[in-house]
Length: 198
Image 1 (cartoon, rainbow, N blue to C red):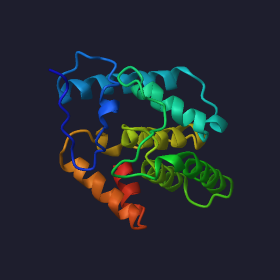
Image 2: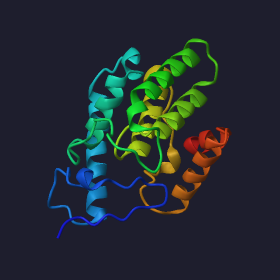
Image 3: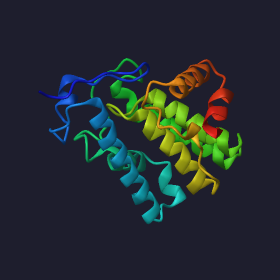
Image 4: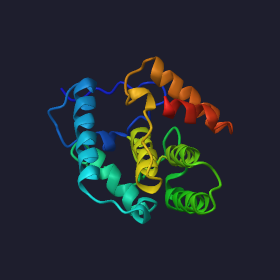
């Protein structure tokens, strides 16, 4: 029968060839897909805890790709590979490397010169990373985990709580998240920081 995708508001639809890259062909429902992805993400968290990740490696293209692969590689063949098509959001796919390098350089500058407080640096990074939209899917979850890693590994502070939600379900928490993202798009980062800390 095959998996039928139902996209929530704010989610990025997959191209047909991206859908075909599902590693577990027996998945038939969105709930099953969500469960397998969440299990894969939990394995990525375990990998992070078991490895002594150095702060200097976090803000690199290699680490960003590796983390995405760890989070989604058991489910999607394209995990950890930058997308090769344009989506409903994100920069032109040919510009991903350039925009990511600019973000990494900017973030390193913010850290070196203490331009913002740690939480604001992590959230500004998260916001711009998801706006670039490096991967075919999973960008929101990946960018939130990157923000947590920046807090824990670079600043040695507690990760964000994100309302204790993975924002997959179309509920009130996801609506608040999308609203905070839209405000950040308009230049007000504070609602997104507040959302992350609740």
